Amino acid sequence: MTDSRTPEEGSSGADGGPERPPRYEQVIRWAEYINAQPPEVWGLQQNAVVNGQIEGAQAVDVSAEEKQAIREFADEVLEAERGATGNATEPDER
Image (cartoon, rainbow, N blue to C red; front, side, top):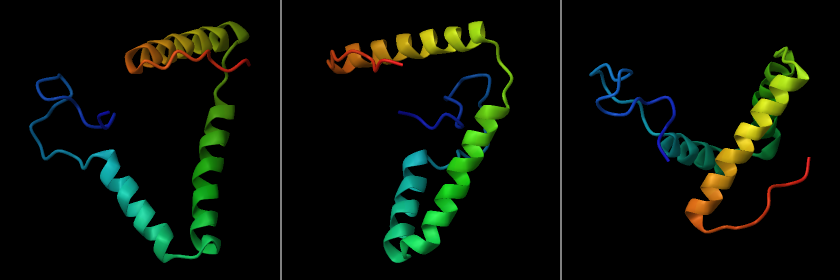
């Protein structure tokens, strides 16, 4: 899995500048941080990030038809990924 913010080499989004660090390096830094800090510290920070994501998603004004199209697209992507990994489980009922 590539970092979605880093354009692939040769793509129109590649600018020849320094490549941004891959997402896994940031995950490793976060894991080290939470191992060094008590949950009372990092838990509040993590809650703020998650709450911000939820608020942002709720602020998007989409119709029922658009939500259905998004869900169908997501299901297709998940099905393709499961097929690629050999995991044949059914998607969760919503």
